[in-house]
Length: 348
Image 1 (cartoon, rainbow, N blue to C red):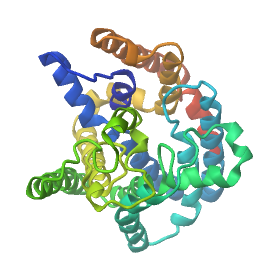
Image 2: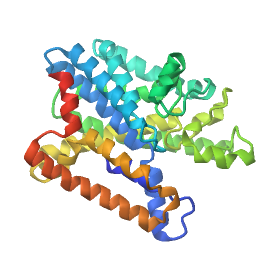
Image 3: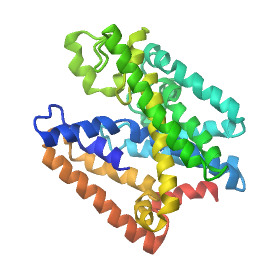
Image 4: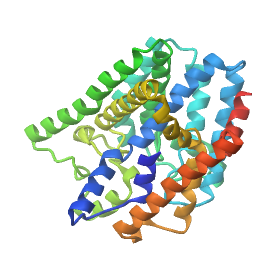
């Protein structure tokens, strides 16, 4: 949640001091990885819901509908953020079939999505930039956008959700799961980035910024819209080494999968050994959907792109600690968050 807030509220183009450089480096580190973690946790939730709900198919279908409609409603705010909830709804709907698949089938699907993500994202035609209710008038293009384009295309980001389903099955098996997640997650988070760097150094291909398929005069426009990535409708193998968040290239997808596994494994390990300390940290996390919706409202009247670093960090701190205090109060007096109650309707 903090990573998502940081990415959406902090934007530094040209760091000119040690402070702004550190902030910029942290923004680059978490960029896209908060999203991947959300999707992995969604897959974990599907596995747990499938095991615990009295009618799992009904629960998944209702949750998919609620998330999808809530995403459409939040699009009305007209923020620069790509709303993830429509994709979440699609993934939960897909889970009606995927939850019955064996771990081998899920693993094969995961590998297939990762292996083809770079090709599908580069070569498929663009769809809608935002998935608003008015775009439902073109249902084919709407579904096409969910699958291949937009901020969270299934044939790239679906890998995170499928991974989450596998992680959920692993967590149900016992205490050793956290160690496996930390070990494999650390390797997956780092090794693809190192391999990319070695190949870039060896072949002299600069993919730190998208210079491979765009003319120099187009760079500024492309870099300002991250989701444009390498979409040229022509396949460029060199682009597969691209490491920036939300690029949907396999190097980044695999690395983000690893960092998500690492965070989940570390969280499980810590909560089991220091439950008294982590209880207060977990409280805002139990209201993540409400937090996601609330954090969009400041972006309707305030833009980090026109604010200084100090103002950005001030708004970030106020939003984070303000919601933390709100979550502590709400949980103590009312239990589940307002949107969490709505979502739980789907499993009641």
